[in-house]
Length: 116
Length: 115
Image 1 (cartoon, chains in turn brown, blue):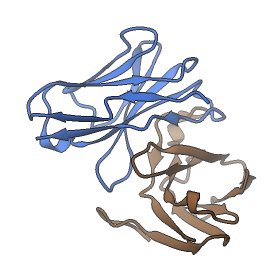
Image 2 (image 1 turned 180 degrees about the vertical axis):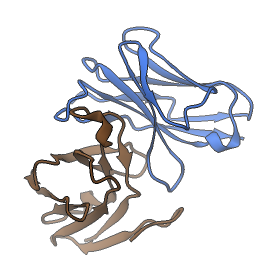
Image 3 (image 1 turned 45 degrees about the vertical axis):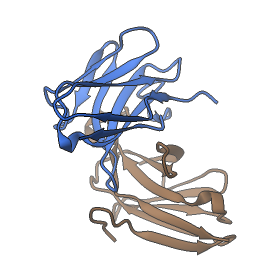
Image 4 (image 1 turned 120 degrees about the horizontal axis):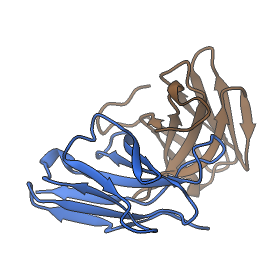
């Protein structure tokens, strides 16, 4: 759900389980989406991206799913490891940028906690 | 792997003072960005910069803010007269192009604390 102020949605998983982190994006015309991982004291780190003409893209241990009908983006992490513990942000590119990134609009983030 | 570097990691400044945050983008990147993140909140866009001029700026980026690329490697954000509400993490990012296959890469940020 939505977070307010300091309270981020938190997902707690057991090491080795799969994780699914969800994001509702704001603009139905956005055409580019990115997932970033942010560890404590660090900047956002690129994980995976997807364009609006796709509904699924796979990387190493990660899969991004895009459902444009309901403006929903998800990040699936297979065999979650303690090193995956971080805050995960989705970001979208506003539609007025055509084929360019432009500035990114970030979601509020989900904190993933992996229990060993 | 090349990375965006930011200095200082933590800056403490008195309200009303000027502050300059520094960034060295990835060397072959052409597009540069500043974002900020107030504690516990989401990352917010401030400004994008290309070919020695501002491409776009947000409502946050008012007249107190300016950006500059003083030489071939540095990209700076200046806040002329800091306010308490400027306290935040400031992230620099860069990308090779604006195309959708070249994502923005972020530095580890400068924590700005205004007293």
